[in-house]
Length: 237
Image 1: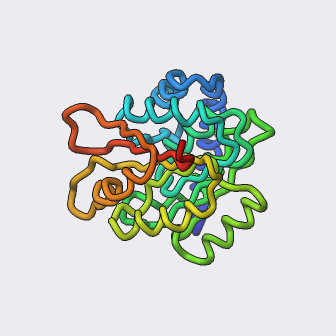
Image 2: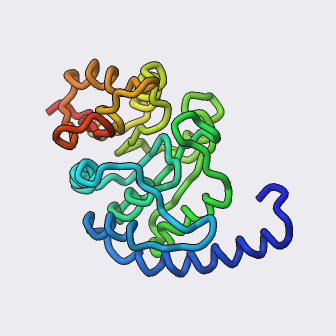
């Protein structure tokens, strides 16, 4: 909470309590369309006023269909920002046992939730005792982050990995090369922004280099030159 005044802490506590009640009302389904719609319906208070989602609706929906069908038990997301996709993974995968967020504070591509947001994100599975949520605030490529991740994983491997952190060519390459070693043999790897061509974004370049080495799918809005989701199937057949 930092150096917030007593008044600010009281105000935040009230906003969180009201927002938690509002959130509880939308935690009613694992249906993909209903989950995506629930993000629009949620109206919280203060710091918790919205669940922000930077995705094209149909691109994410199509990706969600594949992920849900896979029934992942362990999910890891690199780059959580304001929690939109993290919320989606928690809600459409009711059988998930571990869902892990890795996010770099003050990252160049929207990263940096603080502990106030962690307590809000932790409520996304308030109705599910079988799902454990973990939050690692650090560089996805650092030894300290990997050490924390290994502690969370234990003997488990990652069934679905979503990469949406460092968007540079070098960054996305390193994330994939590091984390693919921690995945299940039949795991899925999702990439966001495979169709974004802005300066500083190299995901499209790396995606086009590696996709032919795997069975893969692309979810891109026709005519668009931004966003886009890619999915790799690690199992060859």
